[in-house]
Length: 312
Image 1 (cartoon, rainbow, N blue to C red):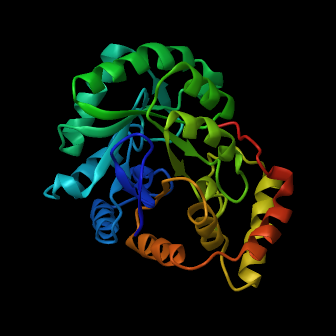
Image 2: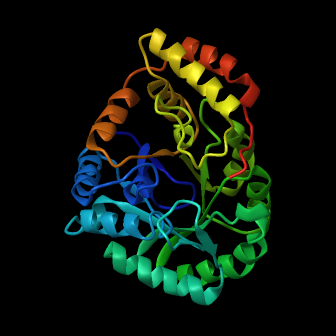
């Protein structure tokens, strides 16, 4: 495993990192024993950065991750969670948003309790681009200022944001002094717009976490879950690309993982799974060279949806 410094933080993160959304059952039902074993396998392979949120499975992901990390020396991992978005029912998409100071302070205490820690390496403002950015003003003022307070008090190490909309990323970088960006679905086979943020992030020494190399499921043989906004016609394009890879003796997931993790300028790429076999498979793929002729053929099929911003 290779390790890179995350922007101006002192975090030396593994080039592959672990997103715990799957532990919350975002993609399929998860047994706790499987979740714990998966986290332990990731640690054994040298993955040292874990990201989670109370919104994943109505806190299930935080609970499972906390249980998995219990007894693990704190020096072996970096941990981030998120604030502002909360899922009460367990069903993906049934969310409430609150970036007020009081709610964030309570959220941090609750997350630390579930995770079994008294310090968080990074805290991200979560999905304030949802619902046509109606929460952006509160997140970038009261929410951001609360995280600055927590950082000053030594409860958290770095301030981050985890959103999707590219225009809001630019606003965030211009209006705040965040340390880290967690950007999902913008550096994968069908979208490379994350490269637009590089010059400014380099100038500001802001670290980038590249998330969702599998395009939230679009770049897998199984396809995206029902909640994904892709249309039937758009999903058919991804199915064609997957068949192309199968005919070539490969898989679209393999090419997607390799494309997002090799020969790019980002310190870490975050993938999510609740299966030990997937961790082992991803690490194996990561060590093999990417077939860029196959990448080009895939992107030719996906041209109608290249750099398309989905309406999450």
